[in-house]
Length: 348
Image 1 (tube, helix red, strand yellow):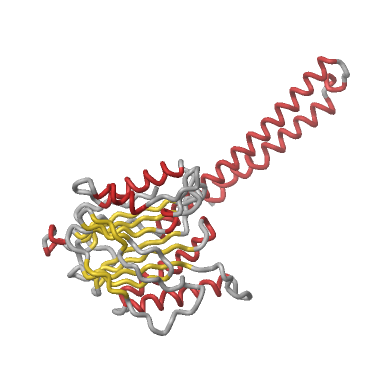
Image 2 (cartoon, one colour):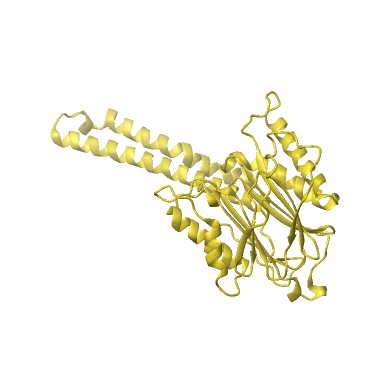
């Protein structure tokens, strides 16, 4: 009863107020003697009355649309927080920072996805890019991330994790359009990384840009092999050999990103050089993942003057394990290791 009563005034204001204004204008025109006169003064008064009524109706509609837009943004923000959960600053000895910037400013939701989870098989990370952006990409992001968060604990082999993601995507596309074949444009680029306790890196890449490895003042791609096709375009090959990518030594960092970063263009059509920007960042001393994020996003926004055409996401992992005591690494095998000073990742 209380909820029903609370909604009545809103409906009355939404429909009753414009109706009352319209009734007032009609009543004035039909019953007021001044409205029946043809003099200049009478016409001015009549025009002023109808102008006031029209302005009131426009302002009322505008206010209703603004309220509806605000509610949609709140819902989109809640969906964003559920899908791309804020990452803790440390996961099993790795310093972590991540952020995404959607090209659809109204929705605040992008088609990029990322996650980092500590498991008994090592720290596993995913970075992906769904074709498209905004509200339409939410379902695909949810399907891929949900499958990843479950599979990384169940599957000891990274190849089986990728197969789980592929099946989840195919199932999602079938359920979204059960009477149609999935369009050729429906695909997701995915990069899977596994970082062992000794820092050894293993990767599987389906159409995604290779991350950059920051070691000292060196900035190099983690690997140079050709990636597999994106998920959703073709069936996965029978043989999926994981790519060994060396080791992430203490003090080294990995910068994972989506192609929206390097595809960002300035007014002259020049692309943003991520490698050059990272080379400038590593010249500074004690560069943290958070500082790398701030510097890169500032550089991209300055390069594009805030008019990016695609979603962008960045994920930075730094090996700080030698600086942590063994009893402060958090519970392994859990999706969110314990931390004494949790800080949420900011969404830009």
